[in-house]
Amino acid sequence: MEKQSNLKRLMYYAGRRKYLTYLSWILSAVSALLALVPFICIWRIIRDVLGGDLQSITRYGWLAVLFAVVSALVYIAGLLCSHMSAFRIAANLRKTLMRHITKLPLGETEKFGSGKLRKIVQDSSEATETYLAHRLPDKAGAIATPVGLIALLLIFDWRLGLLSLVPVVLGFLIMAKMTGRDMEEKLKEYNNALSDMSNEAVEYVRGIPVVKTFGQTVFSFKRFKAAIDNYEKWVIAYTKALRLPMMCYTTAINAVFAFLIAGAVILTRGGVTNELLLNLIFYIIITPIISVTLTKLMFMSEDEMTVNDAISRIDSVLIYRAVKRNAGR
Image (cartoon, rainbow, N blue to C red; front, side, top):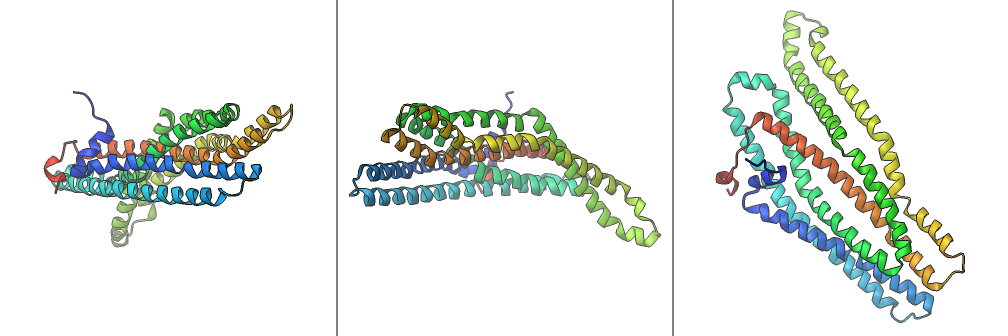
């Protein structure tokens, strides 16, 4: 049997609201494309100012405001749709998990530990909620934005447009390093350490009356101390592993301006023209969207790894089955 993707599996829990998730993707993509129109209006304003034509400035200014407001409203509508679906998925997921846990033998429950079970039910469902409500719509917008940007970057001046895309390529390469299989394994170990510490903390609180009654010492909770030390080790390792790639990634996505200035210096060796100056100003204004888009993609990739790990933990407690009967309630 072909293994279903995690997203398709989560859609079972959405019931009739799964179509709202797909609608949120469309609305987010439309919002991202509408958000590019104000930059074109700003470019027209700059062109008219440099050309001495001041009659159309007000019209383009109001058009920029109109498209910006419409883009924000469409994006809000997309988030409303995605949240309605994500909340239904999180609720049905928790209901299914708790229904299954209450039917487990006591030995199976003790094998996991109450702290781990609480973390799986609460944190794993919250991770899927964040991913479905925010990151997936942002992913649709982040895909639509580069398509519109590439068209704009190549229409005005393809030379400056290609220079603007160089940091994008560097950013994707570094992002692949940060979201690869090695980093996914580190994230899994980090979550394992956090889950162990949470479980031992619960056992520690429950064991305090025993310590007081039988006069035990704090060394009776050496497992809790070992869990804290293990968590510290993985936190530091995870942070160090991301330190250099994150520094290079931040430098790359914010280096568009430097590439444009260097390209402008080369292209103006034969003299500065109004057209080249206008295009350069346009690229300087619009390229910050690239860093915002890539940052959204980076967080989306991180949350996707978190969701994959959360679903694997849910599978360790619950044998996956569709909930068509209860999802539409």
